[in-house]
Image (cartoon, rainbow, N blue to C red; front, side, top):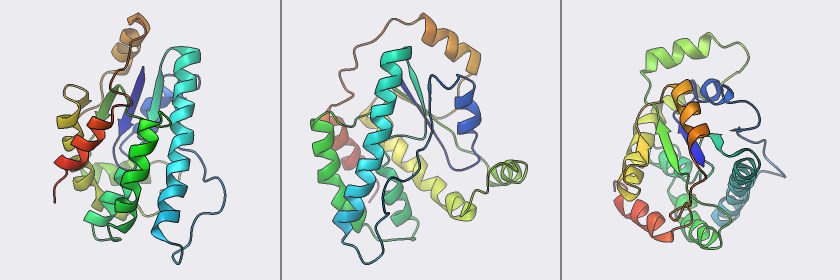
Length: 208
């Protein structure tokens, strides 16, 4: 089973995920290779970040296979970031639009896919800021930008909740109860993990 935790910076994703131990935790990865520059075509940006996201999804599959389940600290299928950035006015929709056919093909090829259960946390800006300032281990650059992305992040996962009914919850669960449930559950078939129709329904339901 692949569990996905989502929320803006300082929402508590990493703290929650570490509760399950390194064997299950899929953190964000450092960039691999040279990040495209502003002058590079949007297709280069889209392809670079898709490769990055595929690495994380494949890591989640490995942890699931070896340890029974994976807890992803942010969604590996992270196409939502470019959409949220554009909706918040930080960039155009060009990279997101270029990503759509690439991601769709990668899902069809089973190189990347959806999680089996999503937990998405909205956090009040003052609480997020207090948690940021209380964590000296991370710099959390561009924190104000992440705050501006939050309403759009919620819109994205609301659309996903319609495309994947009963698979998206807008709160983090009790950690110990979730761990007990995951240990109790038998391995599941995940028929919608690589279902391109879910991706199509998600894109169709996004606010315009």
